[in-house]
Length: 202
Ligand code: SF4
Ligand code: SF4
Image (cartoon, rainbow, N blue to C red; front, side):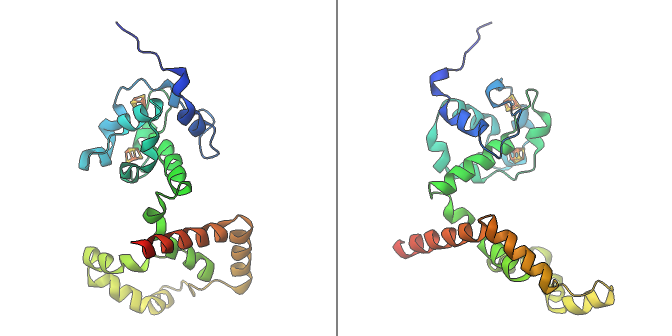
């Protein structure tokens, strides 16, 4: 049997992933044996050209084009790969870090821009909400019941004795402080600004 050894000179990308704050301490990225078990359970692989094994191979081959490749946005973050990998690698984590890099180099900004309305909702109400641009899709997928739920939400909550969805002022102030001090607001504004610039040049 022939054993292929990883070229240690081409591990910059892999090491930057292992050392990322989002990576688990014992992430087995360098131990990947290319067995493909992750791909066999991956729903994205079943329904698209996405292949989690190939993602890891490209990382280990120092293929930096992966960071700007649309394919990294096809993962559902379901963690199925994470639970079956025999060497404790997590393609799910690897992908999240690659996406982070993609946002940092700006190629991924357009992919997350639509979610800035989640951020706006956190800031305004202290809770998340479905981005406005998905509203019609939700009605299409769920049916007119979704629209009725949105329209009658206050009444339904009252009937179920759930109280108001609006948080008390003090809690809202605490959430805003957390979002400010963790850099969430700055990051949100940066993503919006870059996306607006990109849209202007289109
Ligand atoms: S299951 Fe783990 S070891 Fe196997 S190819 Fe996927 S990442 Fe590599
Ligand atoms: S987390 Fe992503 S890569 Fe892993 S199984 Fe789910 S869709 Fe596939």
